[in-house]
Length: 158
Picture 1 (tube, helix red, strand yellow):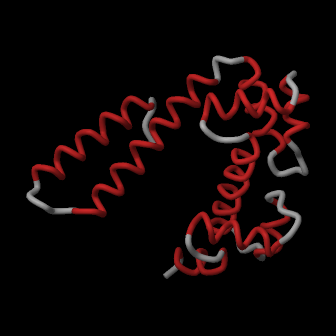
Picture 2: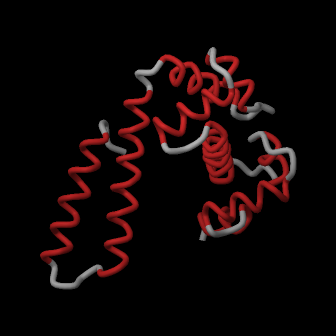
């Protein structure tokens, strides 16, 4: 990870220059990697700027503390001192995403970490990360990473 978003953007631009000078080496895969890193950095930059907004700061703090629990947009909005529609509007405007997408991202990040660092069963991990249904967890995990949680764990030890 970079310390600031501008470092990531600068890295992306230098990588793109390197790929462009390498006479066709990399091709579509290089372009795909560049765009992924670049847009993640831009999203990170928008999110960092958004934290200047007190509603966003409170919402992010609440999400980070409670993402494994059974929380709703209304809970987050209440903690941030805003209505749910207003929070959703601000969150979308500032980050390009929704509060619940952030909750899902944190849950899946934690699940990914637990799959790598523990020998807990997938069902236990699912529950500990705030998913009420292990099947839903598996679907969302596969959608994000392209493999099932069990396969992900096996791939890391192969």
